[in-house]
Length: 118
Image 1 (cartoon, rainbow, N blue to C red):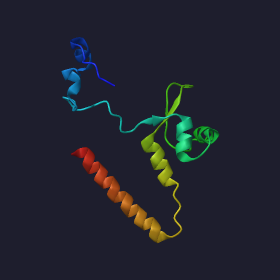
Image 2: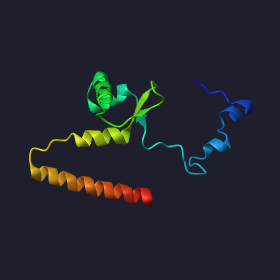
Image 3: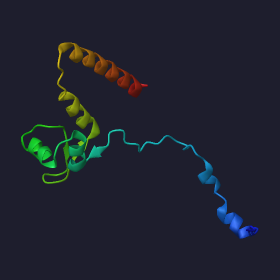
Image 4: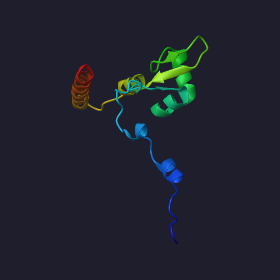
């Protein structure tokens, strides 16, 4: 099949404007959220429990930390709170494993705090 030559107008339409060709932003992205929030469905899925269990924990002042917008407003769980709650629930079969995990966690937290400060 023979290709037809493009008209001048068609060539202009296919050309990418210069402002869109730049791949890197001219200034840092400040809108990236490194601690997103989840609704109770997604938070329950993350923790492997039911939505009803999440509600029971809230009623009994247990479970992961959460935001509630207004008195009867929506509930949102920050990812950092879900991870912390998950780590607090770890059960170790022996003391050696608990000590090793605590050391790894402490070094990880120290490294992540250094990354944030630099």
